[in-house]
Image (cartoon, rainbow, N blue to C red; front, side, top):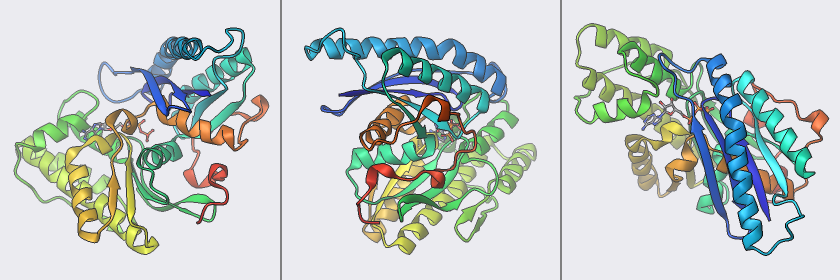
Length: 339
Ligand code: ATP
């Protein structure tokens, strides 16, 4: 009937209720906003420990209301499973989420589901679009990669060789003294800027952001207007991501692309991908912003599919995994589908 999702890999303490029959997702989030600089793992974990219990209680209240409205027995559990983001992410944050999820699963005596956060970014796009076998560009804070389903797993076709794409943009904005998160500020300033040339680094299917970030900081220090550097950054970084996404579509012969991750909220990136897809006759799906940035809705939706496939965890096997890669996940919920 309904699944509770809990997310907390880095900045978003979030809980969601997914109503399977109506496909309705209710998300309750409490973001961590650093006072200065970027995300400090210890401060982020302190935020999680304060915010997770309250977003979870609010979500449980929502589940109770749904159960009452559906005429369910108030003595029955209002949820049928608890799904949590098991990784990748910041270890201290993940441990709090894992502890909360185990406690709630035990309290209601329902199964526990450990969800890979990056696969959840992909699956929410597949779920909302109805696409069968899309390629996925995950453009998030701490990650950047292109995935496609093959032989029972989501394979990483291309990825960053250094930092995640959002973190790279945030490093530049910290350098110019802007508060976190920097991505939306790069987007608004780029609208006023003239393009400047910055290093474009794609090697095969992989890309790198460290050289371009050093060059962008240097341009700014040399007096180039910050709007122009932002424009150059967007054009260069997003062209790299678009090139690799296009090559992935071409290599796999697929004609569906979904976007995932917080940087996916950027309209210039969406525009470049849309143009590329139009030119090659492919379909693009961009999930709503609430499903692009970190959120527990995507954890609950994938958690429901995993639970339905019997892919649940015993509490003693439910340790978090800060380096959990998407290609480590056996895709149990798509068994029998074409590769
Ligand atoms: P991950 O999913 O890898 O754990 P994350 O936890 O950092 O990532 P996300 O919510 O996926 O979180 O992404 C946050 C990032 O998105 C931040 O780096 C932020 O600057 C960036 N971002 C948000 N909005 C925009 C935008 N409009 N343009 C560019 N970047 C953006």
